[in-house]
Amino acid sequence: IMVEGAVAQGSEDKELLKALEKEEKRKQIEQLKVMFTELDDDRSGELSFDEINDAPEDLHDQLVEIAGTDDLKSLFELLDYDGGGTVGTGEFCDGIMQATSGEKPLELTKLLKQCK
Image (cartoon, rainbow, N blue to C red; front, top):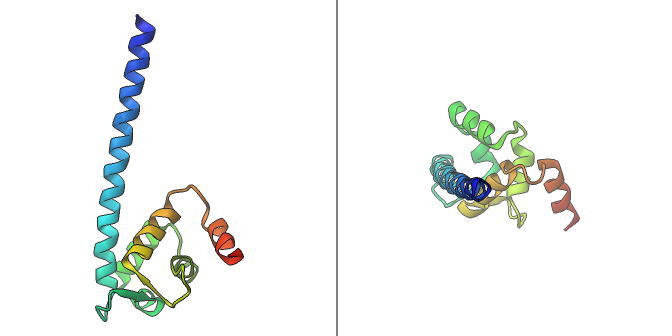
């Protein structure tokens, strides 16, 4: 009986942790969408590297902190999946989330992209 209770409690804890992680991810995506809008100087719905590079210092520092790298040029190149020179909201948010998820190091993601 005790083992069953411990297993049930462990399962509930995992579900709670999963729900908390999902909520945290949702908040991060919302924060990234706001950041994207603030970075998009020309209101085109696309970001160029110049817009990111020329961002106000506080916004620049916030992006460096979230992305976990100060090499924003390499980060931008990773985010620009299609090589078009700009990134849309989806590319920006999804790319930053993937880069910060820890599933693949930034360098590995860059190498994989170069191989395509």
